[in-house]
Structures are given as structure tokens and as C-alpha cells.
Length: 116
Length: 114
Image 1: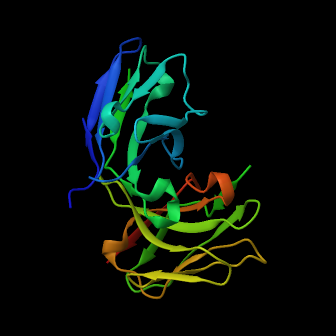
Image 2: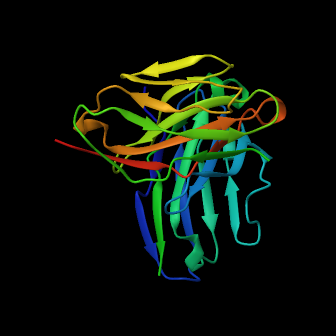
């Protein structure tokens, strides 16, 4: 089966510009996650979707970040406007069975964002 | 809250050397424990996991044992290869309502020289 697909792989933008990342999860995976990985750190959860509903967005900086998962399949994460501190790798992951990690959790290759 | 502390890197070894990467955790209840690996330019891949105390996870020659008494999940491999060069992350998922979320350590960069 195809894995979790993310695009673009790399993005360089100037600060204050908007940027969007796209994720297509594994077919049949109803739970989708966005994580952010800062340089030299482990990933941190930003938001979790169960189908099209955001069930945990407590770590999403809502003043500039937004996300959507229309039709409960692919998802878009947006930053507007971007700041220098947003430079990081943005990882998408998906799972089935209501997202219990021990049942299996697949990550995409990530989008590396550089804000200059 | 939940947290994971793992050995600072980088770690540099010669091929066929023994590898240990230490990992300890703080969590309430009975978390599940994981090791993920990130090869250059690739996403995170699950290496092994353990879901209850005294379980041993193993894969590709790597092993880790869930030690509740010492809150540890150290990664070991008896003989590393150049192809094992990667960043290794220890992670946990909490019990109960937070069982969907992974909490990661900072990662340990391993370089294996021929």
C-alpha cells in the first residue's frame, strides 16, 4: 500500500508570507496527525483529526496556524503569516482504529520549512 | 506531564561494535514505549515497541526491554552496521485518554564507521 504522502518536501519562504502543507494519509486510516519537529528535537503534536473532526488542537498556535481535513481524507496545514521560529519539519501521520498508537502509526517523509 | 529523556548524541561507533542508547521516561499509569528511527531524508519509522512491563521489543537485531521499576527502555544492538547510521528516537504514548499521542525524546544521532 502507498504510505503517507506529503508535499512539498521542501519550502523556503520569507517571513510574513503564507505557506501551506498537504498530506494524503494511508487509505482507510481515519485518524490523521500533524507534528512539528524543530531542529535537534523530537516531534511534537500539533493537531489530531478523527475523520473530518479536529479532536485535539490544544497545541496548535491558533493565531497563525490553521488546518482542515475536508471529507475526512487528505489534510492541509497552513501558516499565515510565517515567522522565523516556524522553521521546522512538519510531519503528517495516520492510523486506523481511533488512533491508539500501539495499533500502528505511519509517518510521512515531512515538509522541511525554512523561513528567511 | 509525560516526558522522555534519552542519551545525548552524537554517538560514533565502528562497525560490529555494541550499541546502547539510554532512554528513561516519566508518565502516569502504564504507557506504551517505542523506538523510532529516522534515516537521512526519510520519515520516522517504527523500529520496535513494548506495551507492558517486562515486554521485550525486537526488530532487525535491535532490542529494548520495558523496565517499569527503573522507568527505562534502553535500545541495544550487539553488532552495528554502517546502514544503522540514523537518528533514533525514544517515545511513549500515555495510558487512558492520551493513548493516541506520542511524546518523543530529543533523538540520538548514531554514526557507524566501516
